Length: 110
Image (cartoon, rainbow, N blue to C red; front, side):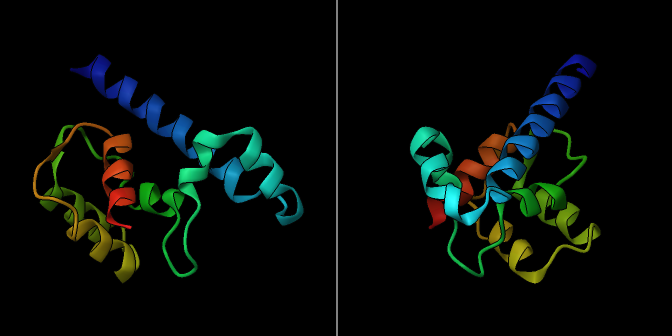
């Protein structure tokens, strides 16, 4: 179990680094970057929508698999913005096995 938690933590850190790179690409170069890295284009967001990095920061330290209810509790304990808590609370009610599963479920909401 400890090895699984370490692997999940590594995956989460890798996702955060990748998403941070996407978030901070200069606007003039963002379109070209997205064309070169189409897998990242799914992380573009509408204005006002929390970024994937903000969501994962709100869920830092979660042990997977976990339930939606636990994700909401963790986000509240990290004093996440109301929009993030609501976004997580509106996820389907089932177990999530990784940060990627949470991100995928959130992207399906929009």
